[in-house]
Image (tube, rainbow, N blue to C red; front, side, top):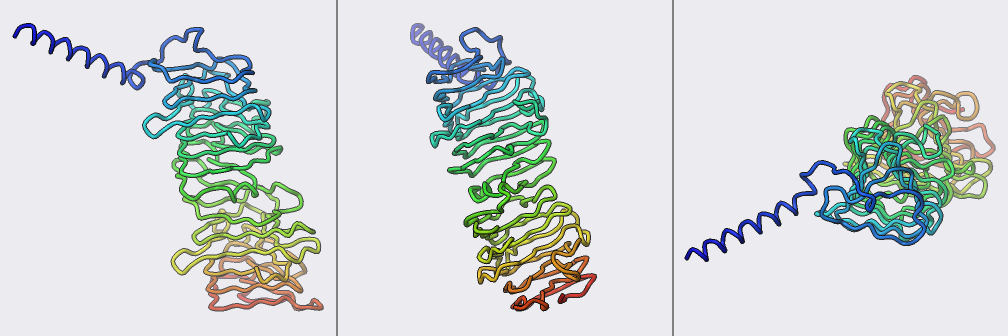
Length: 409
């Protein structure tokens, strides 16, 4: 009996040791790194980062350049020291970080503070193998990899890149959550069910042509500017077919440039799905068709219970320019939408200040649309052209438009 009791005690102690070992990663303080788990210099051959028993599996001590395939096991924790970062450059610089809900992969700073490290950069990693699934990237944005302070972010894209990103957490950045630099040409193979929280600037700052790749199930909380910020990629406007889905936060059109849809022969078109919201920055506008383009179009496809909303960042008359329709496409169709706060300037000839302006030869159908709080008119159309602008309006409503509800020029 004494032997049996002793065996039970030994078994109990052994099990307790296993449990303590399994919880060690969550409970222990950050240990002193050994030379075997320090990442530095250039990774030029394929490498696997292994999830070990320690609290921290690897340390970044400087900017690490990855020019090979880097595979990261589920549950791996990587701690970054101040001034460090990791950059995936060239198409051979690839990350395959496939965590799980129970074993996420973590990149974090040693200090735990915003701007504790640079973050992650993808520069010319044009490879469809790139994957971030169940990965937490936090505390980045101390500075930019190239010294340009406007680019500070947890994740930065420059050059041509491809990425699959789902169920990730991007948090606590000293600036942007994710940022596309001017050189970026980003294809999101899959982008959904991510969380963006507590980032000092916008959680996402992307080009307009990237927005079509966004899924609709990501979550945004406690970001200083809780929008998906967008800007124009091409001088030739938004080419091809694009659909912007309803998101948990509004899209935000940044800067003073117009959102141009279709330019010369690019024949672009944009559809905003039911419930999508587009907030316009000061002095911005939307131009549908420019410089002889006659095929581009804009669709606002709301429903009676989920309108499309386009408004100024502030509910001030004339906060933004308005929507200028210049194409005679039957695709120009607004259904269950609310448009407000525009009319800051004439979009064509004198007298064309309005929430919506329809130029000569252009056409637009609006059904169940609200037009309000304009510094000009609700909508205005050009009747002085050889072929006047054509508006089909069904069940339109108006409120507090300074120049009147329906105007002509």
